[in-house]
Image (cartoon, rainbow, N blue to C red):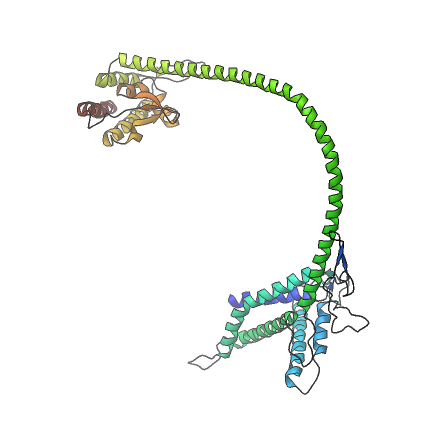
Length: 446
């Protein structure tokens, strides 16, 4: 898997290099050393960084290389043939690397690999016109290839070491013939790609003064384009500043008129705000009064329910009465016409008793836990099992529950007496919880 990933990455980088090496570099906007750029802000001139002549250029045509291929060719030609074996090796090595990359491209096309679109690749054998590429785009692409080559260097080094090693027992190579050949091709392609990319940023040593690197040429072009853009920005800012000054004068006149109009409108607006505030306050008072009336009505209804339940008996006797009401009738809407008080079914009776038994059993088992002594009246399960039946809430009220609110939520609450301050009261309350459980159990057995 690692070999396949490394191989795919190197092939991908080679393909990217092929796609940009013939594209025409946009140098045409870059001035020579004698040209200047006006500074709109200070009325001075800016001398940009001139492009350095290409090794292929002549004194009468100081132009940089038109593409990467021309740049590579200029490097090969710039390394003279001398008696210095190292200089000769540098030139031959770069030429060999370029040849390896060219063969890799031909193999990819002829071997059924991903076909290269000549219109994008910009190769000399394409039918479509060669595309241009900006200095910034080319510089970014080359730096990306360099960084990705550096990332796979570790894997390549590992494969290179393993290829040279032999099995300590059989003394045979670690890889088979096919894999070894595949690795050698991969290493050859990696070395060629590394060397070609390296020459973009650092030239091989020569006996003559080295020409500028492609990176330096691109950086000079990018610097010039940045300066040109800055100058254009300054010019735009100057125009905008003049326009802004004119607009400010117009705005100043309009502002004076506006202020006079605002002063005329201020009294009317203030009066209108005061009237709106008065109406809002009256509406708020009416709303608060309505809310208070609604709360009082609800509390009166709740008190009436509690008094009605307690009128039938308190404590154990009251619980018995409410259980008899629960198992005898239930409250439901019949056909949407508001009729109620039909006979409770066996299934509904069983569910109600089981729910009540669970509720009071939890209180008896955990009297200190307030969550078991607090029942939300709007809980769907409570209303389905207990609340909708006549006598359902009555059992809780007879057992000491009362209507109340917790965090704005309407509940039925059972307040536990203080065990330390009122031992007798707590015992009576706890005994009532246990007795209620027993009464429910007796009714469940029937």
